[in-house]
Amino acid sequence: MPITESDIQKIAALAHLEITDEELHTLAPQVASIVAYVEQLSELDTSAVEPAIGGLTPEGERTAAVREDRTRPSLGQRLALEQAPEPAHGHFRVPKVIASSEEKENF
Image (cartoon, rainbow, N blue to C red):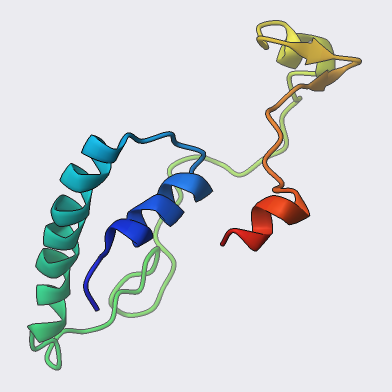
């Protein structure tokens, strides 16, 4: 399935990015090229490759821990918020990321 300019517009909207028509015309073939390149991975024969068992040895045993797993004191609210750009009432203030029902209809 080819990547279209419409796909790029939807991705940009989901990422809250404003792109110009010129950027749209440039990005569509670039993203299509990247996707085609990555799709080449599905052509590889991986039947002889063992599945990854992250964090375990080939025998299935746990790897040695680098440090002891123990409880430590946390930063605390005051220290955690000390360098926050816009703390508000003891919390981190972040941009709104939930789309309105009108914005959802465009997707």
